[in-house]
Structure formats: C-alpha cells, structure tokens
Image 1 (cartoon, rainbow, N blue to C red):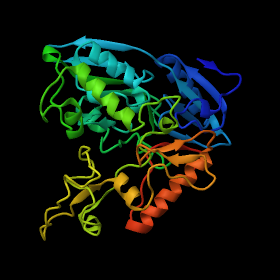
Image 2: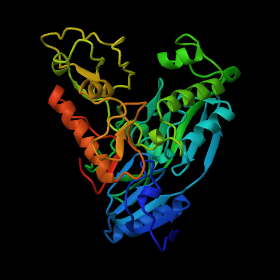
Image 3: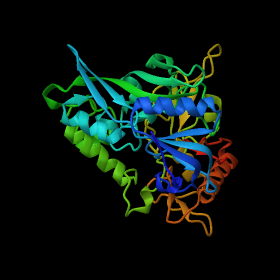
Length: 381
C-alpha cells in the first residue's frame, strides 16, 4: 500500500480524459493491501472511491472529495474440474487481457466480450455483455469487502440481482448502490473449447462478420478478432490517435419501459419485449428489422416490459453522429451515437452539458429520460 505524494488528476486515468485530482490518492497492489486500506478509510469515515481501469467514469473538473484508491491487484488462479474450468481472477486485472488469456488457453464463454475496456472487478457491477454473450452466464461468485459489516465475503452470482447493465453493486446516476461493497475477485465458470471452437455464435452482426450462420461454432481466435474489428469500427477500442475512442463507451443504457409507452413510439422504433426488467440483454438493430412487433397484452396480464434502443431515440431526436454543442470540445462519436467523446481538451462540464442536451432532446421528443451508464464522481446530470 502506498500513497502518492501528489495525487494525479483523473483526466490522466480515465478514458474520457476529464476530471481533476482528488484530495488523496492511494494504490493497492494486492487484495490484502486493498482490504487494509479501505478498512482504514471507512473507520475514519473518509470519502472514498475505488478506481480500476477508469473506462466507465465521469469525474468533475474541480477534483474529488476524499481519497481515490487505485486498484492494481493482479492474479489468475485456475482449477480444472471434470467438465469445466474455474478461474478466480483478482479484480484489478484488465478485462480484455483476461479474455485474451482464455482464448489463448482454449477456454470458451467470454470470447465475444473481447475489447471491453476496464478492470475485471467492474465487470459484475454492471453485468457486461456484448455480441450474444453476457457475464451473468459464466459468473459463479464474487468476493466482496462489505461496507456495512467490514468483512470479506464470497457471494454467489444469484445474490447480485444481475440485470441489464446492472446489479446490486452498481451506482445508478450517482445514487448509492443497493449493496455498498468493493469487488476483490471474481470466479468464472468456463468450458474447455472442443476442437478450439467457440460457443455457438448468438449475434447476427457477429455471424455476418464471420460469414457463418447463427448457432455455428468457429475457432475462438476468429471470434475475438471479429469482435475487436466490430468494436473498432464503432470507435469502441481505445486508440490514442482516434479522438472518437476517447469515451466511456455507451454513455446511456437502452431504456426499459412498459409496452403502453412503447406503443406511443413510431412503428419503426426498435424494441424487444422482456419478461422482466432484468432479462438478458438483446441486440436492437437501428433499422427496426427485428423485434419490432409487440404482442397484444391480455386483459389480466401484468404490464409487459419493453427494451428500446437508446441510439435510435437519440438519432430520431435530431442528434446525428458527430454532433457537438457550439464551442464545445465534446461531441457525439462520428461512429456510434451512444458514445460521448472528448475531441481534445474537453472538460467534464463539456461532457455533462452534452449529456444533458441529449437527455432533454430525447425526453422532449419521446417522453423518455435516458439514464447514464458511467459512474458519476462529483458531477450530476
């Protein structure tokens, strides 16, 4: 455990490249150091924030109250079992490096989650998912340092209430998490890849990129390469030379609304019926080519929940790719409507002002308030 004599500004540590320095900055290189450090902060009732990869964070320009703890814990343990492999991964490991490791060692289950930035510890907090795979399908448990009890506990995934980009551990729009805790490690249940092949391809865009049919299995390396290429085409793989990649990924989550509200939208609006609000993520094409029909609601049925496409709502609210407010150094990505980018020298206020404008336009046009996905530090939308 060490304390930096001069706290670094968060613009140097986040993919949005905005944010001032905290009052204190500390670093933990293993789980024991992290536990000791956080226990001291909590005992002193000092404001605290744990920062991993910094890929899903919007921090205020004038600094952060209290201490920022840099999580730099490392380690991957493997336990081979008869039909599966259990990986116990420290929370500070880089997520994409973990995916690369599983592909190289012939394990299937997270290959379609290639290229997602950030740390392993952040993955269960928002139940990451992409291209037909979701963390919840392979997550067995997490080790937490619980804020209320101060104890280290291993919690099964079933107790995390994993939903669409959410869990009991996630702060929503700056609000406290339902369960205040820090992820120390995660347990993933993966499968040995038979003949080096992936799980069945479950996402139409990925299938097209691979030139295969849905349900086909292909070499793990090909899936990873195709996913990385798709993400790069949308500016979702960080590239220092490409300002479109200086973002927090998708800034807004796809809204989940009642089918009554969904019926007020134009017929071409992409939508997908859900059994419950925490159903698995579903891909929503912007052209409305799939999932646009909502079955009639029975008189005695519970209201049906419907997931909408935030990207479609933004574009139909007259906010195109590449849009920027006059004089602002923040802008909508030229590749992906959901990404708010730092075009060079943007401030947190620039990003926040653009986010508020997008929210106001969508709400005025459709009556729907988009919810931000990043963790907000010292700033409100």
